[in-house]
Length: 219
Ligand code: AP5
View (tube, helix red, strand yellow):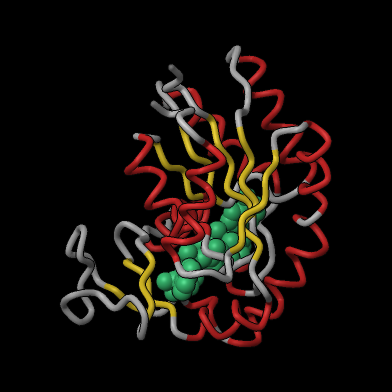
């Protein structure tokens, strides 16, 4: 019996992390931290953090490590049960900072799920992506449109394209991933907690791969 799962979702921009996160959070009752969603909220609210982050995000670059780790530390302190980290860590310094934060709290990571998706498929999916500006829920203009055009099925928020889903910015984000985030695959594989699922499959099939690896860990 294990309810206090700590899971990281790792994968390139558009690999399907947010899509799988929705399913995992519901099934396993995890608190969800999407650093991308948190940053977009800060940008929309024009907070000092949002103002600092916006220029990096619009350029398809990663926001500086120290900005992000502060946000995550606060989330972890308040997350009582299990949690799902989606979009964090993205650099080796972030991964090491996370190890330290968890050690301080007497916790540890259980799994790192790598969602691996072909870059051509990513580019075509992101060109059709729509997101809820309130809760961050991902949609797809063709394969998963909101039931009512422009309105989130879950929270009723406004659904629209993301500013950083322009083709040029997508290319930059993919390059950042290769350079700064892909090394985390080896980092977590060495720790023996990483498994990889196929993000090229249909949503439910990818999720089935995750569930079968997690087994009854969340029961
Ligand atoms: P973030 O918001 O985390 O963006 P990302 O990593 O680029 O990932 P995405 O949200 O683009 O994609 P996803 O993998 O969640 O895919 P989705 O499920 O939506 O970060 C944005 C920015 O914030 C970064 O560029 C950076 O500047 C900053 N940032 C965030 N965290 C940071 C950190 N830790 N450090 C520094 N900077 C940070 O799917 C994509 C589309 O495909 C959707 O339309 C979906 O419906 C569709 N789809 C998904 N799966 C399938 C499927 N199986 N079949 C068909 N369609 C599918």
